[in-house]
Length: 159
Image 1 (cartoon, rainbow, N blue to C red):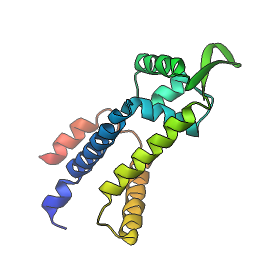
Image 2: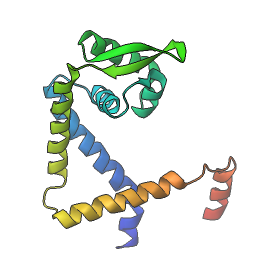
Image 3: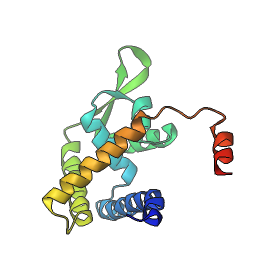
């Protein structure tokens, strides 16, 4: 692969993510759902009883935005807030049976969007792509935080 293509890798990854997300959002809007709502429902499916604070982190949402989303979902009968037995000031979050149909629709949207994205790739190529991205993800996840003076050091390295 040429140096120019490697240099553009970060931009390519960001653009792929942006386009995939936009396509998913187009589908979700047809069902009257937003991406943050979908994130919340999917995270609650895999982590029932999670705290509001932790769910905001997982869904990458501002806590106040999450409160508004949860208020609407609670009114729609999809989510139930319960007092946390360890901290009566905090709530744990639980999906209701009424949310099952919505979650099924979200998983179908995810599948349809993924199928479009991977169109033209063989099963082996799909497996390889996911495996490589998992390795890149693991590399990034394992990195320690940069020291405070790292920007100054990197500027000197460019000289």
